[in-house]
Image (cartoon, rainbow, N blue to C red; front, side, top):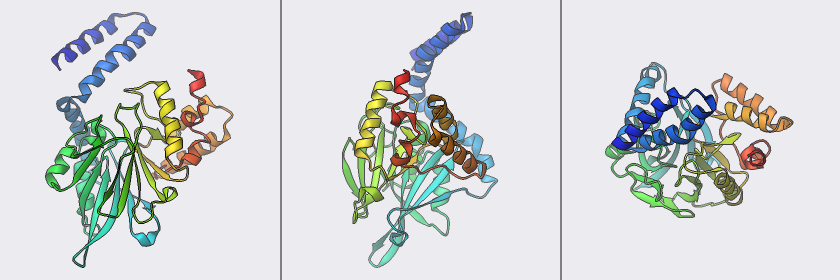
Length: 325
């Protein structure tokens, strides 16, 4: 770790001395940024900055009522498997699936949390008197601390909770490592299928969740983490454009086009601006951008989305972006 710190300082100072702006940008993109990223992956450094960001937003968050969004049901409302979106930091989403289980004729509420990096926020929600749920499972899409940063504390609070993550990414506090195409069930109620989507990280995964009693993929919900967003894709920290193209084609083949997709961040407005620059004549991109702007003005989420919607305006699914590279 000390070597990476030394290199970061040396190259940063060198960048300040360079007069050419093009050379400075090249040095930042190809040397300084990768070194900074390597440092971020160290638990000590990554968690330090993650906790600092949580601390900076905690006072404002606690001064207001707990904000969460009811985002529908898995199956019908009668199935009582509810999906909740919990915003945190500036644009992150943690998702919660609430379901009921009977133990000796006593019905209890349990929860699956997807990328709950703000452990205090999740605990506050689960402990609400109208929720009163026990955490059974954590689904972690990838290793970045704004997605996996709550795993350690949540494992201490809920020791029986299963923490699921990619074999490749080795997310914090993981107790169940999974690979591409793996499937497992949760309490005999939920079925989870793994789709490996490398590029943002080498071991990034998406979770396709359906009812075990009715595994109709059209009714399934998908948690895409930082791979697929409304109008775009995630940063290519551990991949390139060719790998992103392959990954997007894989999603189109393995995810039902009508399944609801829940993204890891609220990036829609900025990504749809890019989509319009890539395809200036795409009316669907303009309409979606205007809709997203209205949603955000009213403090409402722009998720979920579907592949059927995304292929009309998302340049990374339409492949328009690749012809420009």
